[in-house]
Image (cartoon, helix red, strand yellow):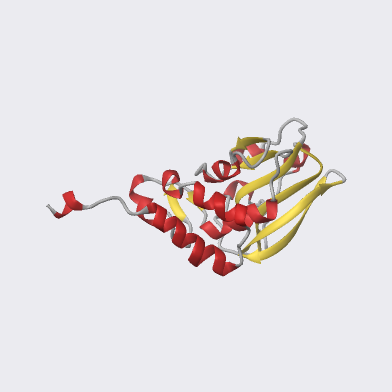
Length: 199
């Protein structure tokens, strides 16, 4: 009988709590970022059994190695990216589909690739913004070819085991990254550096 009376969590209230207690208190106050985080339901991007915890302040397992990063990572990524309608965005999706949904409508076009596809490189492209939904140890040379000169990049970056939000630009055919805030960001193992032998 008790099970029959259970109802779905109040996700609208959970989204508002996420904004007020996780994002605003961490310095994310851009109205457009908060509006977008409020508009896209995180519970739609996790397995059914994880819906009640879709708004916790840590990554949510999706099955296999895929994770939905904590809300703060996505909010900070959006704030640093500042997408505009003239942007052609390349999103490396961490497996949830949530980041592409956040960007949809904020930019002129959005192309989504998997980490494995991103590692393969690709033909020369003209993307003006690269967003990576996870933390990487390195960026493959081939991904820079897909970007226009001076394209912006926002990603998670792993250095000595610590993950940080990082921003960068393509200049002279290569991407230089600047680490910013330390955040807990799910690792994208496809971007791991080859392990070197040590003696």
